[in-house]
Length: 259
Length: 328
Ligand SMILES: Cc1cc2nc3c(=O)[nH]c(=O)nc-3n(C[C@H](O)[C@H](O)[C@H](O)COP(=O)(O)OP(=O)(O)OC[C@H]3O[C@@H](n4cnc5c(N)ncnc54)[C@H](O)[C@@H]3O)c2cc1C
Image: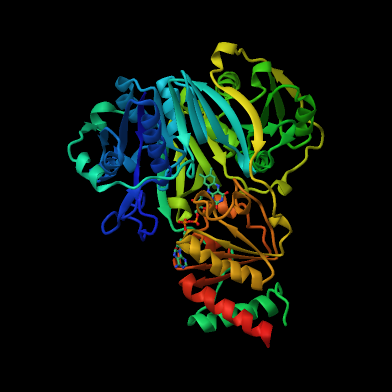
């Protein structure tokens, strides 16, 4: 089974975010980046499917030069090769345009299965996998929590709201978007990291894959959200702040018994 | 502006985000001086369509076909594409539900148009709509506009608009049946049964006090700290999703869109960033306390009391103070 998995590099969860002067992206200097969390679950799922059914895992990332680091991580964990769609201004692309570039790169690969995370932690569009399915002419399913392959059919567990799930069946080839928590993600081993050095990362230029495009939506500006509720911040050393909080909860909010 | 709202139902019941989106659509129609049409897709939905027609809108479109029940992305996309091409709305509004996430991008790609997903608000300024959505997991907001020709598609986040502001019409709007062509071969997905998994041994909805832990708790062993606080306050322990994904607490204790929705007297969030999928499950709580080391964590947007600091210093101090007041 040939599996492509789309992985995006995003700012690390605890990276301090500062808005860049042009107001449509963040300052990238001095922050660290990591693999988008849902994508790391998608990668893990791809590796497990390969281990069970044989085949090849191709990791694909659209992004600037730094995104190669995330591809290297995927190779170190066990992906066979990497495909980097280079675009320094990737953050200007709308979801449809980004998906078109990915689809152009994936078409010649003729994969049996394409996996993506269900959404990214930066833009959070939550559209890429489903857009890809339509652009590649493949069936899809989203927010998947378990995958079984039987012959040419996928048996899937799809997450729904409020603790509900649904079973689905889908013919291969197909596109799936993966939910965090579907599996336990592995760490790269030293051996894996060494082996990754010999694996190929091919770079394709977004400007060559998709020389011209028309945006369907425009990000005007990003900003720190305005607070709508007035939070009362309590300050002081731990002991003091704990006493203040209990006092407030008893006598102001009246949600604790005043014993 | 000609607005088309796609309402969502399952087994004859509204998804309540549909009604919130309808409320937003009513506002937008009033502000833009537009026509508001709502569409309902499925099978055997006449009564629900009549109910929808009671709200203030210009028309209800009832799209029934045996291949639209149960829902599939293939069926809904094909039907909605025909509907949109026939009715030529400029703006298509949908609730940001699991089902919509499953088909709306496909529909947008099929139409070659833009979809602005998961919007929390909008502004109508100088003849154009500016949509507001979250980025970086709620740590920043973004203003987004549509580019290119209509129809434009947008989905609205659950809880962003209020369905209690829905206006009823002075008389029922007309319900029009719309026929779409669908073939069985078009439907590639085979949907199966719906089921629940979590065994409901605890009922968090009844707890007066909830102490919830997030990824800031770092290790499974540290949960004992929060458990003690919950016990001292006579409350229950709960968690954000990553904690349950790790298996540190059972899924029945997960708060949020894919878990429980609670509204206790007191909700204490320890090391929880406040992602929207968590917040929708607890923002109805009477008093919310957030303890987080990041002063910009979105949880502080909804907290009544905030403590910026290390939970490993503050929670032990709280536990100690509570133990002292219990013994004195
Ligand atoms: C379709 C979908 C459904 C989802 N459903 C749910 C759901 O039902 N429930 C849910 O919770 N999530 C859900 N999520 C996930 C959600 O988007 C977030 O990823 C998740 O809520 C984050 O959990 P967290 O706040 O614990 O972790 P993080 O976002 O990683 O936040 C950890 C926080 O801890 C703080 N912290 C770290 N160390 C300390 C310390 N020592 N002291 C104090 N603070 C500290 C950090 O500053 C940070 O703010 C869903 C996501 C999707 C896409």
